[in-house]
Length: 243
Length: 247
Image (cartoon, rainbow over all chains, first blue to last red; front, side, top):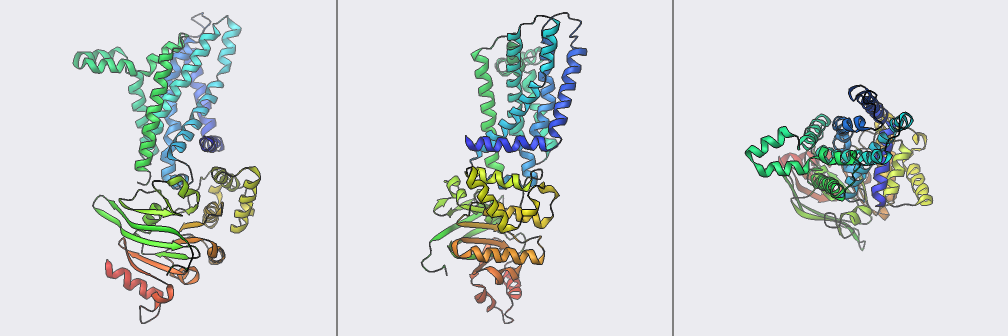
């Protein structure tokens, strides 16, 4: 565990040593603000909650999370530092977990910096802060889910653009899997797949959180989802590290 | 050939690596005992770095095993890597980190606590003369300094086994001399493998040399014995003779 934290610490410091951190956080906050207040009609609704905020957050993550993950492994391979990292006395699992943890903590920091939304809605009205808290938990889990996908795909290539595009595409599939367009199509052709699609849809699970429901089933879903992709990540690193 | 009575610290047996139909390293075997400096020679593309990577446990061999201090680098990788100091080809380092930050990171991963950590980093920095650039990000350094940062990282934990892939590449003649002196100074207590295509290096620091060509070992003897293979007595001529025959 100690090694995981050392790897994570180095990685996280790396975000802040380069403009990656500031650019990401600023763009994230500007996008979230613009979408919530303008497109989401935060004021027009006249309701003291953060629903518009949480409606957009998975889509903002869909766009921005792959921008963090694209460098995780692709950059190491391009620079050759993967050879250094993996010949230090750590296991590959520790390296994978460390990198993932760093990216997740970073997303957590970005989420924490949205606190003015919470203050604003509390000044303007009397919101249910429990629902807001569970929405934030859900947001963090969605970020974790997308990060695990992006991290695994980043290990496939040394080209960051490819890593980014792949991650956006795959995350998008998991985001919209429960949308009627998809499930109707699937149930007409392969009903089994339609059922699976509904179960693996990340946004569906997230919506429970935004309603204030933190269920064990959803938590297990996210844990399994992230665990699966990180396992895949470790396998890909093991198999392709020297290519 | 191994130093008499000294323990064998590096053992490679039947190491083979194939990429599709291409055999990069073909049944390479050797042993290195403490006190030996093995020069690993060969033309570019002969399989030097591939062998080094398999020895460091980074690349998975198609066949054969590599052991460091008795630990199989694949089956017991963490234990093997703990006693190994490895300088990868091109001495890669994280560009945005400062020299001090990078070395402290490596020392932490190697399990050194606070006081010992500072001591180790200081020692490695002194050996590789990096004092003046400790606070500089690695990306701002010259090629020679970068190589020394990589070297410092490999020496950090004073490992019994050192595997250095082209340690003097990119250094100026003075720095080359310093690195060779450093290797010679450490030699009695360690088993060292250096890969190089600079032939003068072999004569200067190596107690033994292996020449590989097209993935195969074509010679494994002391530099003096090697030189006797060609009437001119020059290592360069021996090298050319041995490596062009195969290809």
